[in-house]
Length: 388
Ligand code: NDP
Ligand code: MG
Image 1 (cartoon, protein in one colour):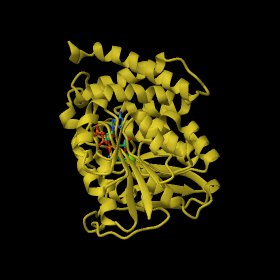
Image 2 (cartoon, helix red, strand yellow):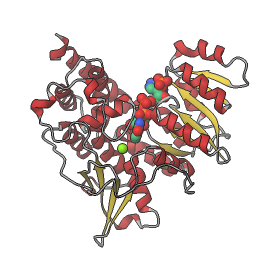
Image 3 (cartoon, protein in one colour):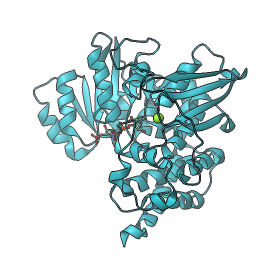
């Protein structure tokens, strides 16, 4: 029986993880659930899964959550410090880190420090502070298992292999809703349009990142840290059918791919059950439905966020953190129609050139860089053509 802390249980990953748990009651037990603002859903989940504790990080929702669970023996905590504490509990075996953005960094780091098994969905944690997180995991013995489908694919391809014999990894990208489009089309796209992903249903932030290809850039950096790769060993190929989730090429030229239908419950299940493979009755791939699997080069000129993320990966230090902060802010603003699709890349590029470079940042440096980048980015949003 694996006892889980699911951080971000009200999100796209969190709710799908609870579906997996509900399907396997003899394998998983929910010890902790957390949400930010959705107290109603959190209370509903708590009633169903009866965790030992729930945490809400938006303080204004604490009273109503506490009230909703008053008849149950469930501890109700509030605030981010509570998150950092509960992940260390003896009674927690595995932490599913499914909070979105840098907000997930402190609790993920705390779980890693405590030597927990961490099923990691929150890619921004590795983008911002991958060196720190992986070093800490080495010291504490924490095992990090990726939930992101591409990284789960690479992880699965590496089982039984010598990591030294990896020549490169190839991350597949669906290309998002604007595949094949050019800048003259992208200038006019609105958030409602960008939120329609062809193959995956996900939270709003990652759906926009998928439309700009920033998501693939974040995933390059995530892969670098998870698998200890050199920048040059990471490639991206556009594969619109999303059947191959990623590939590993070895020193003998042999290429391994992991395939499946695009359904996040598969990598979630793999990560929380690892090293077991557990059965399910989800739909299987039928190759009669996919007679052509196609591949093409990403368009770095049109989707500048991918080029910017690659640049951030090569520059290293605090630059991925700066890029991530600027991106989080502009994506939030884009969702509120305060900045255009193309201006998001302009803003990220400017912010990346403004914040001073730190080669070996501490956690405090990361927090400062994040803060500084957000101030610059907010200023640029104010001057956006949509704000006038
Ligand atoms: P969602 O937006 O659907 O969910 C985010 C979760 O985090 C919610 O439970 C939300 O709470 C909580 N949350 C938001 N802000 C805060 C905060 N400041 N402090 C604490 N908790 C917070 O996101 P997704 O589930 O789509 O994504 C989660 C992570 O997984 C992201 O890092 C994403 O990149 C990654 N990922 C997601 C995939 C997907 O298919 N969705 C695929 C691969 C990776 P509430 O809703 O209550 O406000
Ligand atoms: Mg992914």
